[in-house]
Figure 1 (spheres, rainbow, N blue to C red):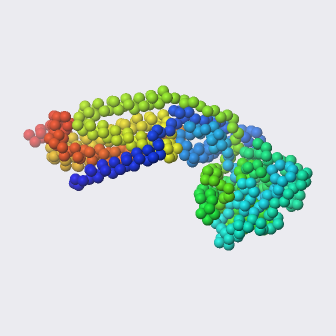
Figure 2 (cartoon, rainbow, N blue to C red; figure 1 turned 180 degrees about the horizontal axis):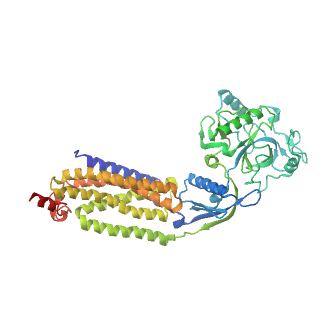
Figure 3 (tube, one colour; figure 1 turned 90 degrees about the vertical axis):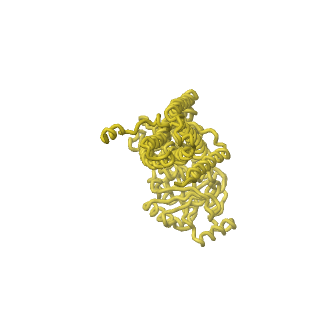
Length: 547
């Protein structure tokens, strides 16, 4: 037996707790954030809008619920409840502000890539036509492109450094007052009715067609996201459902934020085909617009085909906008368009009274456990109480840090799980203590070797019990939602903390205590005196047999 092992274990635990404490102080994460049932939040009711005005299918509603739930959870907001109520979807987000909730949930992320047929300023009247060069006007960034070749990078650098260079079609030209905004552009293949609608379209209006459910098999008119341009767009060449994933990050090759988009095999082939087809056309028909819910978010020129199934969206993106765009894209397109039927900022449904009630329940549980430990185990009970205290400190720091860094919000189900964990933690060291007492009852060993033998036997029982508890918590968390998932999360977290405490605190402290004469000699207040140990189980039967 290594005499220094208990001290090393306690030192490791001290380093862990100190690191968590210092992190909490530096981040000022002193109080955990509360969930909807304890601190209020926002409830949004979404009503589906179908092209024929009828009721949506249950399959489409179920898919929409799954996508919205994944989108909300992907932002780090925990304990958000997404539920289907008749033909509506109700989303409850704890602590989220009203504008944040509406923007996060109601954007349906129906991405479609459409070739540009014509483009003009936002409203009828004078104004310059946009340039399709890489430095596009008014927030229009470059098209999603594959990783550029050295030649392409050099060409792009020249165009950025010398904006005056390029084809004459790339230069802005003024549109005289009252002139046709489509004058000089190729209108071949465009529906005449669409031309009339385009000429009267005003993209500076507050409602620029956001959230409209467009038909991917028909040409459409659309505005840019910032309302500076209007477009005539061809049929969709690539659907949003063909996107396999999207991630945001700082691209060192271009020195700005970008969104990396990967496509499924079919989408990759479609992207390669459309970029090959339009890359040699004159402006503006060499541009490919990415349309998100009826609004053009980017529509730059295509210089060359984009093979490989991987593209980048970059240009005028900040960290926040790039991350937001990636989250909208990677969770797929919703099968329905939704309108916000109601947004209600709710007060705490349980309030501070319920919070105090939960804390009171935890305190009452401790008040029942602590006297029992001290009365039954006496000196050993002090080690048990100290173990509960250490577990409580680690649990609080973990919850506070998760709230600050991972969007975790403490709710009533979490409190219930934490209160129940008092019994789980107590059960672990009770198993250990009883193994020690069993070894001493048999009188085969002194206290120090009895502790080590008892630990080897108790460790297996503790590991099996905690493993079963953790697996149950994981399964419950995966299969359940809302409050039940919150309870499962708390149980899983405290189960891991229980293992840490019993291995790094309870056992080392017990080993060190066994070296003290108070415990080694079996003082009557140690909990290990012969009078409290009782007879060896089965001793009477063995005595009769020997006689």
